[in-house]
Amino acid sequence: MFNPQRGPYSVGISYFAEESAQRSAVQYVAAPVFGPQEIESVLTRVAHDPGGGLIVSPDAFTVTHRKLIIDLAARYGLPAVYSERIFAAEGGLLSYGGDYVDHFRQAATYVDRILRGEKPGDLPVQQPSKFQLVLNLKTAKALGLTIPPGVLAIADEVIE
Image 1 (cartoon, rainbow, N blue to C red):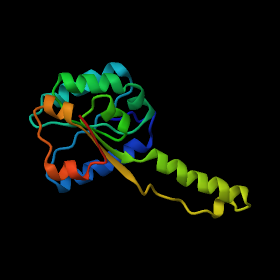
Image 2 (image 1 turned 90 degrees about the horizontal axis):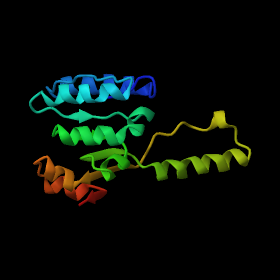
Image 3 (image 1 turned 45 degrees about the horizontal axis):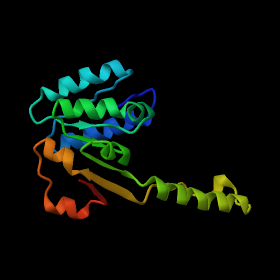
């Protein structure tokens, strides 16, 4: 699920997800939403597919409406993966995404370099280098899911 107006890069993520799903023999259905009134219809549709789940793309729309998304995913018994820790902290099943504190540290070094006279155009573009996996065991239990010990071992944070 994503809002192409609030996170235009989400369309690219959707294409990547579709390609990955094809290689894994998983059915992928893109679910663009443009308003909060569309969220429930998307989750209702996904919930009717046996073995369905939800991947919520990072954009301003999904973050703004996270409570509604989390609550509806719980109501429909949908396992959902989010990109930001706040979703798991507020009741979502799990999140996996960049560590924003680390991103800001990296940005601070660039600010320092620019203030010391380097030209911004000469600085290399950096990709995130640190990611966080956050699991919410209370939500997993409510969904009837058992998180394998290996996954628990690699999680950066486990919410109980």
